[in-house]
Length: 404
Image (cartoon, rainbow, N blue to C red; front, side):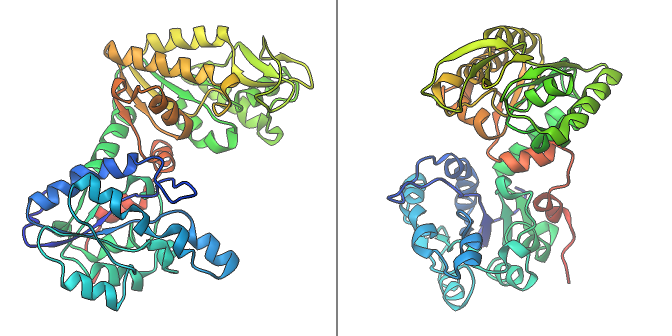
């Protein structure tokens, strides 16, 4: 961050979209703790902080009910924990912009932090409204975007606002810098061989990523529910396993393109199967293309684990996005856990590993392996779009010249 923050009021956009329980207590503060180095740096440099974030989907609730869900989704729920993390008092403003916001910002002293109300309580936020963004920008001298998790959204506080600051007065925070730098390690001249492990339920969710990876990787491991669409496309029997019939041709296209590029696709030879989507029913192991109804594949089997582990062990760079099975159920979590261990073990032996997206991150964290992989991304959707080759609005806006 090449900005002199001394005596400056700094608008910092973070991603504090953290899970809360029924008592409005934070159940996972990963995104909050990830922002602390950036906040600490600004404060130590003599700045004061105007902190903005969204929480949940109030825009959806407002649209459905016409009521702003303030009690449920106010950022005031995060005030005390942020105070504990920074070890200092945190001020709270009950609005994002407006007269009270201007008053509290005007009175903000050097070294203080003012947490603003949920940005998505503002109707224009998710529309990238320019009037709202200008009101946000007018509060501050500088802008720092450290919200990688929302960098793929062209919202007022994540993208539009950046266009009202000159390049010399806006910067990425340390978390944003780290996320972008680690994605670059995969996208540009990675160590070889490079293996991508792509899991999850649907081919449709990952089709752009799969197509991008074919032009980038040496090995492509496919697990999770999407694998059965590939088996079905090749004429295999998959019983009642998840399948996207309208993506059978897409699966064949991916396999054909991979063959032309010399990329080896690895599908799970066997699966852990059950007669229903439940943790309370008997399970058995079956070849993945010989599953008879009413049985369905819900995790990769032991042969698949061994084969995938061997590929991972030979890799010098690894990207992992998505689980190998229904990770939420203990009977079908083994494949994801074993892949997590293989990625961590290979990293410890010198490989580079980037873990990003949903249950793959959850698996790494639950097994306390976060410190044994190279990088765990805080932004599932944003990292996915970045790896797909898309331009992220929250990134491109930071590079744009100031609007008149």
